[in-house]
Length: 358
Image (cartoon, rainbow, N blue to C red; front, top):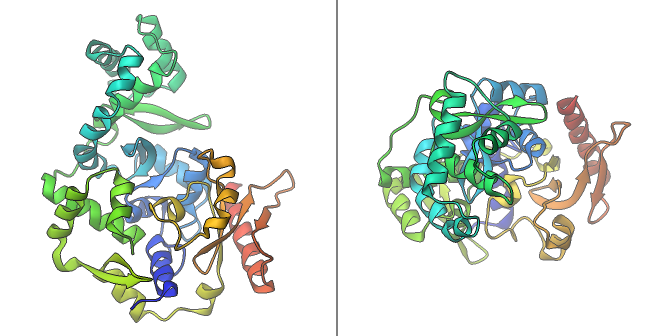
């Protein structure tokens, strides 16, 4: 039987928050497949913290070059994804996501002709490698007689992204501009449905494992049948382990790496300052392996769905933190007092964040 400590170490290795880091933000996106990014600034730190020292400017440069793109590949949530993977992901998630919005579209009085007109207008405006901000897209549609109030504009953008027309591209002010996906990321991988489910599960486990089938189904908002199809496709590439009576899936490569690479003292004593909405916590339906239920209220105050930045020590969430104030300090708010060793490690992580944010 595998111990909880073993499980947490494998997850930290999978997430590249312990052990070998990735060279750059695009490598992180490929490793995790999708990095939650509805909070743009937090998503940028989620990419950078898993590298050997990328700054915010480095992350923005990757976005401006199209080596990482931002869209809604699953769950109706914005994620950073590799450009070559977005289309096959949408190929197995879009139908369920769009079908689930049918009632909301009726409430907003959005019908097929509205989506078609919005698509044609924005395609004409963006063709030839152009980009446009969210406010400008809304103005474009309003001027053409398409009402965007009451979340209509958001749902138009979302639908066009879900159907592979739009994605968020180069940085614009503090966010990003919209571009045509076919122009911004013209290269793509073509996968058959069964192959796509296998790739989805494999990539999830490479960047998040060990995890359960339920975790994967929650993460993708897919189906158990799709997950089982993926598992059958992967065969011996995936194995199982049991922790506290729960069966977890793990890639054979990750299991081998964890057992063949001794844990160093620096890994054992590391304290990481992870961003709000980080995959290390949100990438799973069951978060109990990394977070005591008694502390969940501290992570999501009032249950409002807004996850705070977290302090992680030995794979466990041990507190929250706030971004630097005017003097550049990071405000740590641990659930229990940190040890002297942990305080020193947290100070190093805070300095890494300051270097990123400059």
